[in-house]
Length: 164
Length: 298
Image (cartoon, rainbow over all chains, first blue to last red; front, side, top):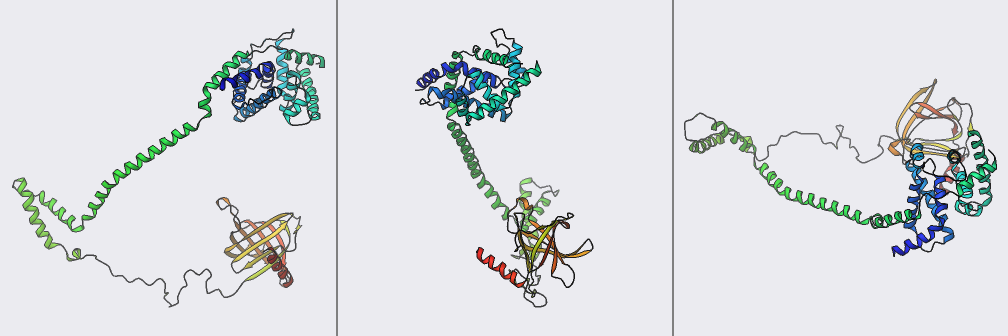
């Protein structure tokens, strides 16, 4: 029974793995190790997993859990220092001729945004979610998401230009 | 930084290769599945704890059950020793220490018996009485010396013959030291003192204030040159944690001799004024209205 569940779970998870990892990495940069978040989320998701979950909603299901896990971690105040996180994420490799520093600037700038703006930007720009999907996840309408994206992007731009 | 640059950065992140392989995720799941029966079904741990606690309780109960008869035996043996026996024992111990050259076995029996017989004769008579009593005549607590009977269990003393019934209608309020004065929201805000029971009820700026209770302190107090009749009571209309806010201190004085106006003061603590209320003695119409309103609420 459990092996069947596991099989279905992995079948659903495989196509969205990279998107989920990207989300986790960007979302918890400087707060905790993204692998911890992934692990916690996947374990909880598997415990609560119902075979009736549709492939479309599976990624949102994982995002929802990871957001709750993060919120719980913040409440318990189990923050690691940014230095430790930095060391943990040092092995990340980037292509396309971008320097590590530039990408890290982007991550730190994202971290300076408000939680909701940050989440919207990550979902839209990095994970590739549509406005409608983000609105459903956040239980708002598309216009609100648009506004959040616009404001977040403006703020991000100003932070990055200051840093440069 | 330009938008294009930011877009390119985001795209770079989008096309990033995952650092965690799906096999690793499968491993995580395997571990979690092996842990699941223990993580999910925590009830057996609770049952274990409960069982362990029960066992401890049973053992302690059993232990005390075993111990109790021993104690009972000891207790029964203690009252058997009375004063007379104690005296005898003391005498025998003294006798044992006497320097007589007699073999130990015979000495113990013969001397102790002799001494007992001798001392038995010397035991004072009052010790032989079954219950020695001292006759002292206490006065009867119910009857007073002046042959007046005190009524026990009566809440109000029979000496109080006058009925005190004061009813003020509260008009306006200002905080002490502040000139801004607010009118009461309603016309039937009142302060009533009926014998030893006081009620303050008003609504000001959409906030209700209600306190009632039996007065336990009454005196006259001079505040800023004016003499007030001040009262204190413990409220009985609300519950409060550790008695905080349940005591109410208030006082009143008449404004002049031939006026109907009254000044009421509510104190924070004795006798620090907090609120000053302008009031007047209730007319018969106002009193009737109040009664009507209270009846309608019933």
